[in-house]
Length: 129
Image 1 (cartoon, rainbow, N blue to C red):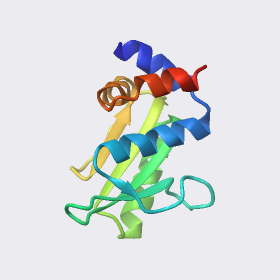
Image 2: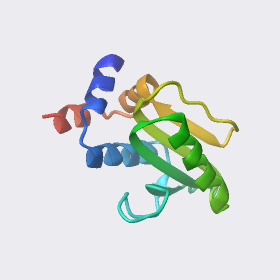
Image 3: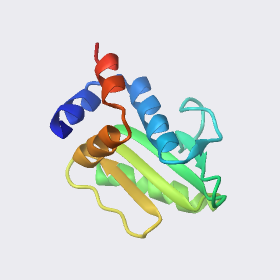
Image 4: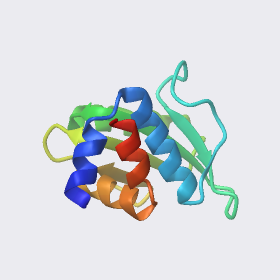
């Protein structure tokens, strides 16, 4: 099931992939407090955890290299406005790694697993038509 979800995620249009990231964050208890994607520099969505007041920086990429991830982490750290960063990428180019407990990578199989656990398999099937 996870492999099927991974293939479905890889087949999403970029706009639907951003919606998937938003849905995953929402189903994990984070609330979006910004527009989705679009004209925001460096960040695709800003989320907030109501229970703790933490703000999260979410970057969504269909494909990304370590250099792209590093640049996103740099933008996140430079902003000083967030306590956590989420980097969501369905097809990383090579192995991606991040330092620090505040940066969370959701890629490939892990992204697919979380999508299935969040009850988004039917949504993925519908989006892939």
